[in-house]
Image 1 (spheres, protein in one colour):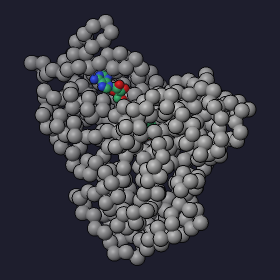
Image 2 (tube, rainbow, N blue to C red):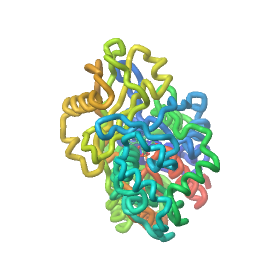
Image 3 (cartoon, helix red, strand yellow):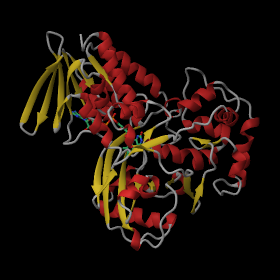
Image 4 (cartoon, helix red, strand yellow):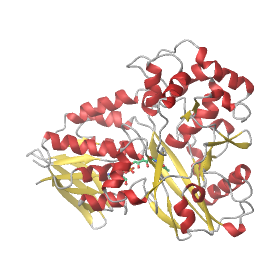
Length: 463
Ligand SMILES: Cc1cc2nc3c(=O)[nH]c(=O)nc-3n(C[C@H](O)[C@H](O)[C@H](O)COP(=O)(O)OP(=O)(O)OC[C@H]3O[C@@H](n4cnc5c(N)ncnc54)[C@H](O)[C@@H]3O)c2cc1C
């Protein structure tokens, strides 16, 4: 049995380790005291709550399949059905059903919602009469660069940007259409009306499953279950500092642990760390990979989690939460009413109402200079304006995700191709993670499994 060191104990690295189970002797090195990375469940007021990702995409199979494979199938949970709600122009305004990443497939149903002005709505409705906006098969544009021409800037600002803020903590004028909205890019490549094409896709079969699912007890259970099922040796509080290639073509990892330095060797290494950490580890091996990885920008954000006593709540907020367009100038960019969204949570803690507010988009890092206390204050006062008076939380905490979400800028797919080409020149080395082909948990699982698969195919493991 050959050996593999996976550097990074987030879901990407753990999915890779799981894929290699029974095929290689796998060690996962994780710098923090806990595995899971951005999938982490801790407790607030004694109740389990996710600090990072709270749901997994169910429209693509990878994460849900993995959850089933590691024994969590029975604990997968649909969120309560509720429309996407946008806090804009002073009120919570539900989006009509049938939108795709904020693009309405029946734009006339926006009339009367107050989401768009009359002019903005008319502009949106004209999209179906506009001539095609060509998107070359090998070309890329920012989301706003493409969409503003078709659906108008106001619809981009009020409908699409809040969705991008929620998923990427990113901005429509910087994010790549091809890499951050691939479904839309595929439609755009065909030319013609975006709204018409998305409507036809929906008419051909609206998905019968909830687009996302969570895990009873917290989605942070997923990496724990994957780690246990992988059979890998897990070393936490172990920071990989340097990679060396040995004369016999193996890889040596120099790591720092609380007990001092640790040297390890293996036939293969998988880097399942954020782009900036992968760049550092590859510095001496591939200047090109280092440069390209270092060029990937990141957004930082903070999650303010609060628990309220239901008995003391003047009114219980309705719905699953809301998104906020950047143009509204609020600090909170999204809120999730966890006790409404996840019925398992309401059953487990019927007397408590838990919600989370997210703060921080790319380019708005200054908001995170505030202290935890200030962020909690801001979150409470903006939630109060959006959802009604809440009173004081019985418990609150701030989780900071410094450089937590990679930004797929224009040309990201070409950059990833160059990184892969550079990494291909390093036998027995693979990269995976949120930096490459999707930031969502499902996409991360896919990259981890593919990285492991490539090693197995190349014979660096399990030979
Ligand atoms: C606040 C927030 C909410 C999110 N919500 C959702 C959601 O609801 N649904 C969804 O699908 N996605 C969501 N995402 C995105 C998703 O959670 C992440 O993109 C994904 O979990 C990243 O997984 P990963 O394994 O690639 O990276 P990470 O989770 O970042 O794991 C990488 C690991 O590598 C470790 N590491 C780094 N450097 C070293 C080193 N030198 N040596 C050893 N270890 C190292 C890190 O400590 C980390 O644990 C969210 C992200 C954030 C920040």
